[in-house]
Image (cartoon, rainbow, N blue to C red):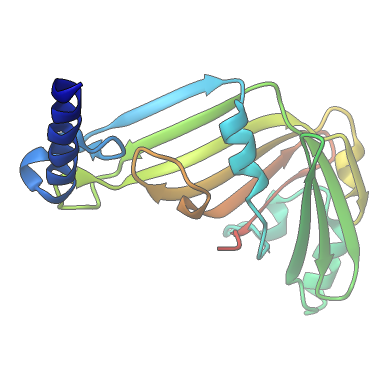
Length: 206
């Protein structure tokens, strides 16, 4: 009994020392080595499902490049608003129910649209050192990526009803090896189909 208690005491001291000393940085379970890279595809486990439930969409913008609406398909009403000089800003409300994202989008004129995105069977997790930190431990850029099929679209997003329309939903962030909801700060949604080809992006609520 005395030996066991002594061993526990020694290990406790070592753990405390490791947490406070650079010499024991290798004992940091969540620290990432510089040059780290990970790309995995797997079924979401309970931990990741619980994490995803904490993500809440905050802002939404329509992605456009130099081609403008010439590179966008399926948002004719929004295109007309843009040509008329009307407000094409967006607000978004989301819900994650029964492993499906339900997105409710309102444009600057009050026009509404919604999307239902069932979660696919697998998700892709990407983590990599983008070499933005000079510290011994890397700051990783992270993505949770979901590639699935759109279930329904309504309102000004009804073009997504054309079957099949696929989606790629990405949650983006930075952090160490251990994933936390607070690591993820941004999102991007790309739709591709016979009548829908556009993308939204924005911030997540902190």
